[in-house]
Image (cartoon, rainbow, N blue to C red; front, side, top):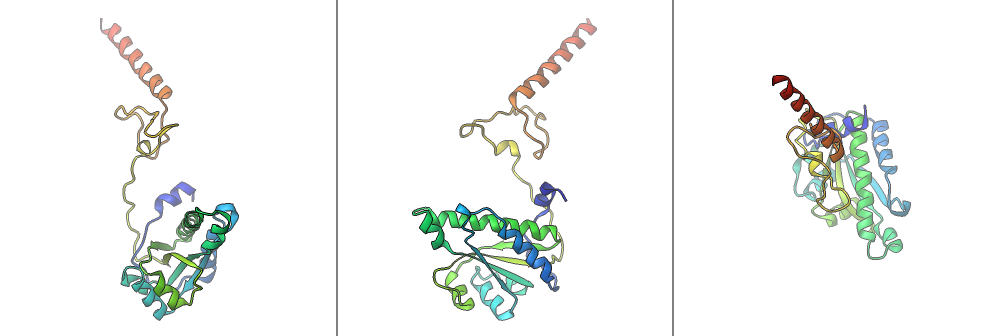
Length: 216
């Protein structure tokens, strides 16, 4: 599957089948996380795989009381050694650690989609509860919990903002696309720069002029 197709198919799933995730697939998606970029290649991420029912129940409570998390075959608690990053980047370490971990999470989500698994990135409301439940060192930060398993069904992909509305050139809100109706096509088609749009308009005007002469 092409990468962009994979990215488009990925969905956050909250309904999972009662089916174990094969070990080789679990290791595959976590290995994808390992290959993410990180600040100065520190690789601060650490992954805790959780399958025990009692652990999952406590984690669900610590993730905004999302009870459905307790029924997922596998939870992966995403942690980071933030202080390692802070030592190299004083004042920016926490931010860089979060960015690095987020990149690893995205790799994991896409790898899960490739393996026909489903996943959901869940926020943590109480790091303290998870620290206590999983006996995590005090100097380790918890950033997220990923639910991984087989989906009950595949949800439809929600609409995305058109690419033409997201890209600026050189300066904030400076766009090099003409918003004439129908010019830039579907939102997944590459943007057309002003020069290309101008050429299209010129051709259209030439055609109109030619047609007008014929009518006379």
